[in-house]
Image (cartoon, rainbow, N blue to C red; front, side, top):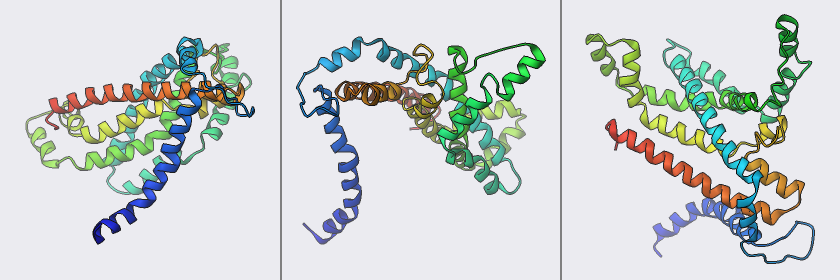
Length: 291
């Protein structure tokens, strides 16, 4: 081994050690758990083969987790993209103090999901200020948190608000890379602002847009804190995400082997879904001249 190779391995060692400890070891441990019936308490661990996977595939709770995740994806991703695009355009067109406003929009990303959930839960409760105002003004009573038609948009909006500053920061960097001469040429040709956005800004923003889309889709498959705090997966499995089902099986029912099987199934579904969506985004990018 040459001296340069030794230096290369030395600098790579922290990342390799981190990957082994926090990725590979948990992955192999999870695969082993998935083929056992261990409950995290009993000293006896029995090998059950693929039984946990078969039970998971037949489970109505797992079916709900599968479909609820896609419901969140269809609601959350457009919300996050619109909000982050608004943030990016607002900051990009500011004449000065862009950095200050970007920090202000970024602050929700640093907020605690638990605290945000508790505030929203109190605000939308029966005796909360919003429901009290609706009841006194319009004689309307809506159980926002326990209504399956309203709770998914509410949770999606909470997460979109939290992430919009972070995603907006990525989109701002994309907007700053677009050559201003293109806009000047469009203006000389009489292009409207609406047409300029869809024909120039949006296609030219593809690299940043692609990054934000993949990040947002990844979050859709990992929603837990807000659901745990607001609904616990209810009402009637309406918000039972993959992470919620894994938590319930592992720590409520102490069925860690079965929970590991669900986690591995959710990983396969997540990677496959993101892979398909990435292919569609890349096809759209090639259509607009991005290789």
